[in-house]
Length: 522
Image (cartoon, rainbow, N blue to C red; front, side, top):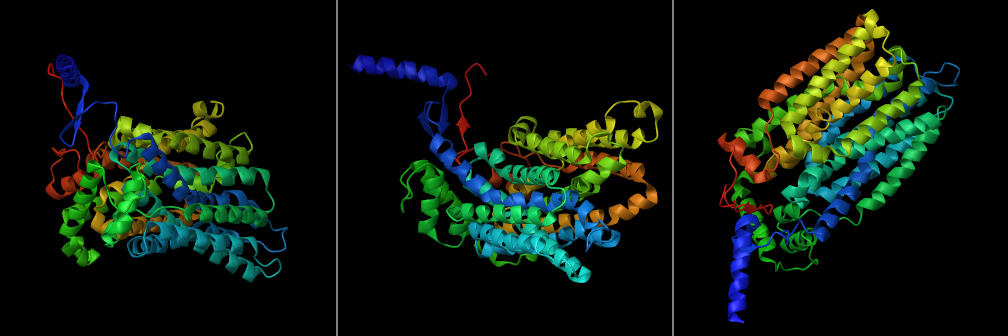
């Protein structure tokens, strides 16, 4: 028996020398993934993120509803209707109030937690959809102001929805699953846009019914949030240690026990606890004092700039005014069908983005996206001015849908994706809120001024401006955007603090990193 054991050990060591990996210093075969990557743990993480993001569909619906309803709201044959100025406010006021929601999001994330922030989001948007469904049918002034209040509240909901689901996904996941799970927010927004476009295609003359359908959906979203466990990171930051252990055990694939028994999960918990203890003094400082630290102001500047380019390249303009742009660009198919194609293109492209971003990396995805967006906008601009391009069949449809696909591959997705990666734990809530607030304010300015600029400069010149801004965005992404692929949150924070990119030596760090043993021949 001893000889058999020695033989087995020798064979095992030879095999491990070639293809094994060490986790936390223990020889283990590749067959057993570490906690957090096993099937049960991944399933729990995925289900939790899906439930958290169900309510984020309201953001997509909020963005897309002007496309589906403006033709009715501006119809002069209706008893009450909007004039051009009022219609522009209807289309853009949600972006004006979204910064308030972003700031509120940062406050709520730290004060009441990730789960309760999602509950507040769903309750607020339910009330907003009810208001949109029940405006006056006889008083034009009351009709307009109730629509404005509803859209204002929906904008606050947009801001509220931007950070909590992504932060929640980043905190409950491990590096291997984090990229795909953070993407849930972008998929939900794209899904909301597509659903609303589809509803608008089927229901073209009853905005009240559309709003009631959205309200019913939001009630379902509220019920989905109630069973969610709170993030262990937030619970631990509030010194609710027992609850944090239960949450971490659950998301690493074990029972919700008050004690952690698995050594790797215990190590993760202890390292996270130690990290939070070391930052207690820093967390007592105000957010504005923390802004002096490079790991705070550097990602803040990068993400604010990224959000600004996202808006200035016309991504939200195409979403909000999809039907109107399709008509004016000379598209030969039903403009509502074109809007549905736009929504489907964004949704289909968003779904595999987690794999694409892990394959390409963040920076390469941004470069490809901005270059393609610029080309599509220049093609749209040239279609109305260059005879050769006018002869190309369906060029406007291809260019608009291509613009949506390429924006989703990078510039549309990256700001929401990376907002959950770049900020350190001590300022993640308020920094995320402030970043979204700035991005949404720029969105309001662009959406509110777009109709006037289009009338003054013409649609083709607007396309040229968007194309030029996409080229500027390309330069920014290439020079300034950090690569976060396959890096833990602590490594990203350290890179901003020290200015050096390095991989930690102990990859059983806070987020269950792995250490691979190289083959001898390498």
